[in-house]
Length: 215
Image 1: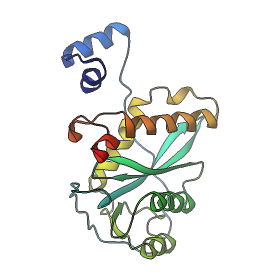
Image 2: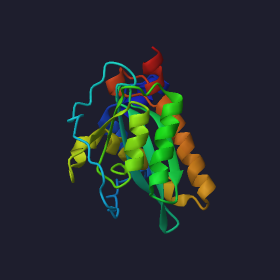
Image 3: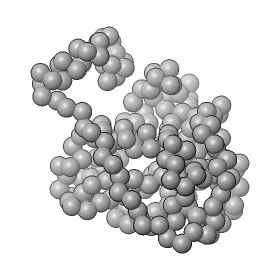
C-alpha cells in the first residue's frame, strides 16, 4: 500500500498512518482464507523437484510456476489456473473454470505456449492429479518444457504461486459481492491487467511486471 501511494501520488506515508487512516475510515484488509483440499486422482508421473525453491531467474522464460486456486462464488467455487514467470512475476496465462479438471490445466499451458517461446523453460507445479497425468507430461515433452514438482504436502516449494493467489484474494475485496459468473470473471480479468501492467513490486525496483520486462 505504501509503495502504491508513493508511485501514484508521489507521497511517502508511514505504515502506521496508513493503518490509522484505514481504521478511521472503517477499511479492513481482507484475511486470506485457507483453501479447501482437492480430491486427488490416481497418480501417473511425478517429476523431480528441479526448481528446489530457487525462485530467481535472470531472463524471461527460464522458470515458470503454476497452480490452481479456488474463488468462492454463490455458495460454490470457480477455479483459477495460472502460470507465472519468475523473472518478473508476470502472469503469462490463466484460465477460469467451474471444474478443477485436467482440461483447465492443459488449456492454461497451451495459452502460455502460444504467447511465449517455451522451449527449455522449467515449469514447476505441485503433485495435483492434473499435473501428474500423462496428457500433461506429453504436452510438456512435445514443446520441450522441463517439468518440476513440489514435494508432496510441501506448499513452500511453490511459495511464489501461493503468494500471488493470496494477494489476488486479499486485494479483490469485492469478490464475495458478485451475482453473476460473468461479473466475477470480468473482475478477475481486470485484476490480472492491473497486476501485470500497473501494480508495482519492490522486487522489481517498484516497476510493474510488464514494465520490468520491457525496461
